[in-house]
Length: 146
Image (tube, rainbow, N blue to C red; front, side, top):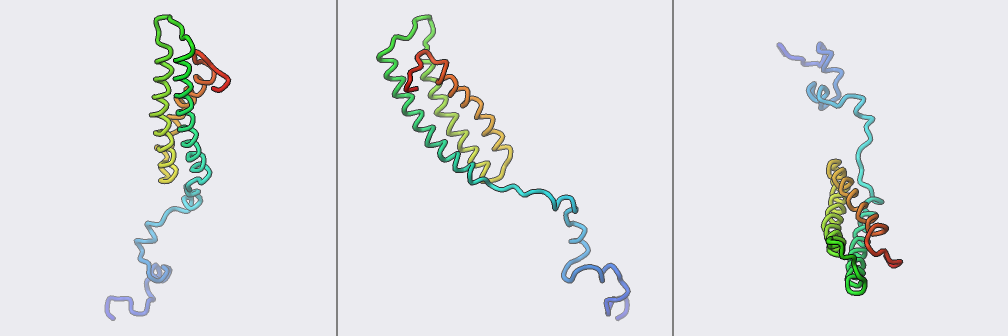
């Protein structure tokens, strides 16, 4: 065959390539250092934690609302010009918006392996933690049931 490589000899680069690959696929392969990267995987334990966190959030909200209704009816809140009762109940409604969003973003980020979504879920954990601390020690009336 004139001008071709009939027997496979004469072109040493093609003799070194595995059968079925071209020289372009070998050049596009990942570098050797990238093969040592640990692949991201979803966490079953995190997903379980988020599931039970959602159950806890609903239970906490229902019990806290019922306790606040009882406190508002039975206990005298201070008359200092501030509506402490309304402020504490409004924090509970902010919790009802932020906590499901945090749990949803955490679950979505875990399932899709999307790091920025997980970072946002972690950022939303700060106001939720602050609300739990507020309700545990700083509200106007802290009862044993709280």
